[in-house]
Structures are given as structure tokens and as C-alpha cells.
Amino acid sequence: MVARAFVAAALALFVAIQVVRDAAVRAVSRTAPPSAERIWPDHPDVQVSRGMIEIAAAARDGRPVGPSVFEAIYGASVAAPLLAEPFLVRGVQAQLAGDGSLAEQAFLEARRRDGRSLPSHYFLADHYLRQRDAAKGLREVAILSRLVPDGLSKLSPYVAQYAADPDNARQLRTLFRIEPELEASSLSVLATDARNADLVLSLVTPERRNAKNGWAPLLIGSLIQDRQYARARRIWAELSGIGPDADQLIYDPQFVRPNEPPPFNWTLNSSTVGLTERQRGGGLHVIYYGQESGLLASQLLTLSAGTYRLTTRAPGASNAELLQWTLICAPTNTPIASIALDRAIRSGWRFTVPAECAAQRLELGGTPSDSPQPADLTLQGLGLDREQAHD
Image 1 (cartoon, rainbow, N blue to C red):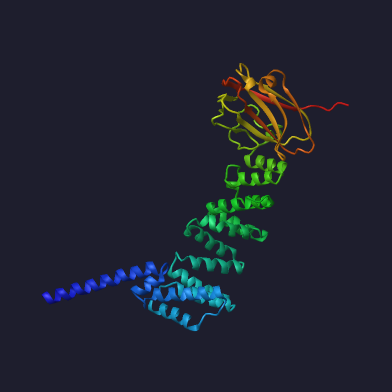
Image 2 (cartoon, one colour):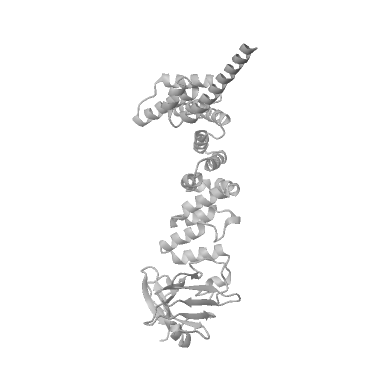
């Protein structure tokens, strides 16, 4: 009985050692093959890893892979039929030989054996896209985006490149409906280039066609950077769902529309300079601390060349002379005109936009006096009108 117990314990220990060693090999073989070889040199994972390293080295050096390498990998697959790598190798061989059907079968077998195998999904995606089977190819791309660490950011440039072909738009829209995160990241990549504006707008799914999606400010910013100001404002208005108000010379002059984003709506700053915030029911509360110069509010305009008059309503304003309106020519970032806020409140502000200035920034800023003091006021509304030219 004692002898039997000893044998049973020894067998259990042997099995435990084998299990631990197998787990160690599997954990190390793909990251440190030499260490794995020392643990168990004949393990199938070690043989496959050794073969894959040799194939990679041969590809790097531009030399053929010896038959013995493939034989070792395929031999390992007999001992470990659930390994995916031998089928990946066979699929690549078939691709190089021009046998697409066999390549697909091999990659599918690799995926069946290891559903989280990145190479099997990658090669299948590549195969399907080469075969113009976008539906299957993009499904594999979507799976990859979830499996790869930071997969969305890594794969999105390739999806964006695929999107550059107009023939692929329909398939991508289908994919984006079920993969909103991939849509957002792919459109964000495309939106960084103003030349992709039409493409981005054609790809975005209807339910995510609004100015608050992450790609929208990127696209509008790209168009502004490319000095396509009028087009940027049209797209901003469309994505924001703005109706007749889109044609106003200045947007939200009563400070009652907080939902539409900058830059064609107000950008309100809160900092060491001061703070600005819309009031419930309308109006803009402005507190200038009076300690340093800086910007408090701004909006990008697209006024055509001509003379305009801005009126400002701010009853009971205190120390309004510490604040000023400034109009900046956006393409050159140079001032066009400026006026102290107290004068603008009393008599209005007349300024002229030159012909070469396609867009302008209207800025409200503060400048401290010799004896620093704060300003506290509420802008209740603005009016901006173009003056008629006189002969």
C-alpha cells in the first residue's frame, strides 16, 4: 500500500511538473525562445517558434527558407494539432505560389485553432481584401481592432487608406454601423486632411453625423488650417443642425446657444485672466480680474470685405474700459481694428474688413490699468450689421 501510494504521488508530481513545464514553454516560447529551448527543446511550441524565427530572418535577409524548416514546423503540428502557426506558414506558402483557395483554407484552420491569433485574422483580412471580398475582410479588421492593444489607433490608418477608394464606401458604412469605435477612429484619421472632407461626410453613418463627434472638430480644424473658412463654416452649420441662424454675421449674439461648438460659436475662457459664462435666459457674464492681459471670449467670423458696425449692450457695466473688442484677420493673425468696451457700449464700433481677409476672429480681452482693479459686467446682446456703401 505504501509502495502504491509512493508511485501514485510520484506520478502526480511528474504530471504536475509536465503541466508547469508546458505552461512555462508556452509563455516563454513566443517572447524568449532560447529560454524555452532550455526548458524543453523538443516541445512543439519551441520547434514552431524556432521555425518562425528562421522564416523571419530569411525574409529579412532576402534568402529562401530551407525545406527542413517547414518540415520541422509541420512535424510539430502532428504532435500539437491545435497549434495555429503551421497553418499560417502553409497559408503564406500557398499565397506565394498563387493558390488563393488553399491559402484561405489554411488561414481559416489557423483561426479555428486559435480564435485570438492576430496573424490569422491579419492574413485573412489581407486575403479577403485582395480578393475584393470587403464584407469578410472588414469583419476580420474589426476583430483585429479589438484584439490588438491600442488596436483602434494602430489599425485606423489602414482602414482610412482602404476608404480612399470610393468603391469601398458602401462596405465601410456597413462595417461602421456595427463598429462605431472603429468608425470614430478611422474618420478621425481621415479628418486630419482637408482633402478628405467629402470622403468623411460620405462615410459617416447618419446617427453619428453631428458636430460633437470627435472627427468633426478635426475636420473643421483641417479646413480652417487649409484656409477653407467658408466651407468649414458650412459643414459646421450642417453638422450642428443650424437652420436660418447659419446666415447670421455673428452667431448667438444673445448668448443663448451653448450647444453648438466653437470656433463659429463662442469660445469662452476661464483662467487666471478672468471667467466668462452664459447666463440662464441669455447674456454673457464677464469677470475680469484686472491682474494680467488675456483673452476672455472669441468667435471665428467669415465676413466679406466691407464696413460693419457692432453694437454692444451691457447696462450697468463697471470698469468696462479695462476690456476691449479686437478684430483679428485669421489667415495672417494680424489685428484689423480694436476698441475699448466702454466706447463700444456708448456709441458702437465701426470697422472695415479688407478684401484679402477671408475670415476674422472677434475677441474680447482684458488689459490691466496702472492700479489693477477688476471688471464685472454682463453683455446682454450684440448687433452686427453691414453698412451700405455710399457713392
